[in-house]
Image 1 (cartoon, rainbow over the protein chains, first blue to last red):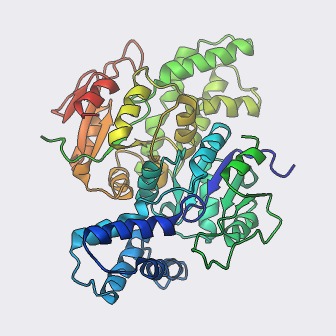
Image 2 (image 1 turned 180 degrees about the vertical axis):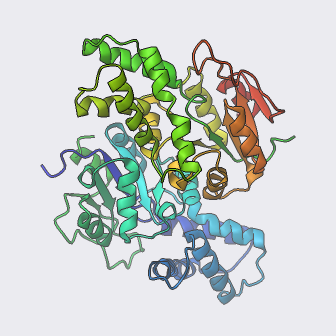
Image 3 (image 1 turned 60 degrees about the vertical axis):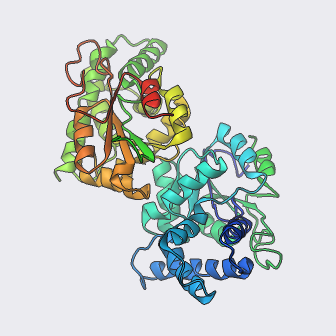
Length: 237
Length: 237
């Protein structure tokens, strides 16, 4: 069996463990209501999120020096606020909104599945999020991580090899003893290229009702599961 | 009050959270009984442990390149085994014994105190132990860390400034928002020099019945507590 000998599971987090889009839209909607702001937050959030991949890729290709995800988002937040006529928003409110990424809610099946998996395996994020973001998010949502591994520790963003290989090394394990869990095929493709085991959990509404990518497993990943409960069952946890 | 505004607590681990000496002596005694070895494990363990500080200081002063604590101990383990007439021990057994540092037991008050503190603060080790050691130890002993911060992430051992400053930065906090908790005065002295808050918890039997150092607080630390329960009470947790 391809999944024998697994000792640790590393999880992509944004989209795989937490429902960032719904969380942030709800968070901003509540903020906007309190502050009496008339903004359509869905396109606002989608535009804000669009800075994520290019910001990380600028670091990955050497166009930009190391920059945290919190910083990438903060730069874009200021830009989008201005575009939406909110250029006068006070600093405290900007800090609060930017920290919405620390207040993301787990998908409904995530915490129960992680608790089962934790009994049998070391469980960790392997995320492009920052240490403080993942730590605060775990506290907010009750994610029972054993350790927090992420891009900021390596000063490299996924899919740079340093992230996968660095996580394996910190866990003190061999690549085939670690399984990457993700809702994104590119992440699993890269993990597999370094000898890791792979599990795909579909999150077909991560990007909202019009999502077109990552609706299904695109390779013969070691496990394909509908949610974390099924993943735990398939891993004997 | 000096302790207002604290958001996270970082804990020295060996000696402060876990009782390494009793744990390892018991672990080796059980192993020796199973293998029918006639060894006095107390001096064996004390001699083994004596490699810790010099090994780290060799890294700190540039005499040695970065080396994990697991590796520092493994080199010394092989040396002490030979000295005790056990030079023929198989590799599997050496690996098992060296991993005794991953199987340390918490002091009796530690887990209950940490659980109280975790409700109000982010809690993390700030240890010279390796990531895998601290992760496995937490799983073994039920230590409910929110995140694992340690020397291996910085490639610097305490008391190098990079460890304290690196932990504060990863937590996304200011120095005065983080309290260092330790049973060792030198650790608190260094933490304070970087603006951190300080809490001393005495562990007067860490080094066994003949311990001569760190029996009492040697400066006016922000908190002095007899155990983690008292620490939690003094921090309002």
